[in-house]
Image 1 (cartoon, helix red, strand yellow):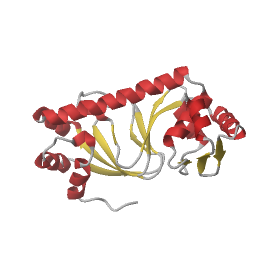
Image 2 (cartoon, rainbow, N blue to C red):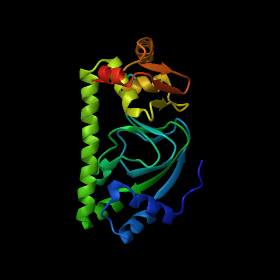
Image 3 (cartoon, rainbow, N blue to C red):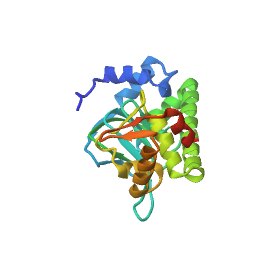
Length: 227
């Protein structure tokens, strides 16, 4: 766990994010004065779907998942958030309930910027509004692609794409929390199906599954499966 950043450090961090491009230094400083710091333990809920949204979150450290849940408790992971990500941007534009649930996957440290302060900055800064809209468009595109994956691509193809897109230098690292259950929730299926898909890709010589990582053996063939 990192030491809590100072407010000046938070100002600098926010100024490096695309979401806050166009905001003057003094406006960012005013926003930061309203920021609320909190640490969440593994498995702790940061905000709950259906509850009134309080603000925009900035993830300082740790990993968070944003999920939709069915009445039976099955989860669909919408996104994994890593340090430096913002989430729950919808509150910048409308006083709505949280559209999903955010859960800490490991110890996570966050800043929350209240909706009222963000709304004021939005009204006063057209450039900020433009960049915020662009950021929301990226989120919509991500969800459109997720829907297309779930409806049009088989599990093995979705898995191949996830590995290809997430790998760095041919390796997809798997933190301790990135279990097959979490992987299944990301892919919209169940752990047994993920296990079979991993085994198939490995038997075909496309990947090598290790304890904490998945190594790509044949990137071209894996890309073909992902299309």
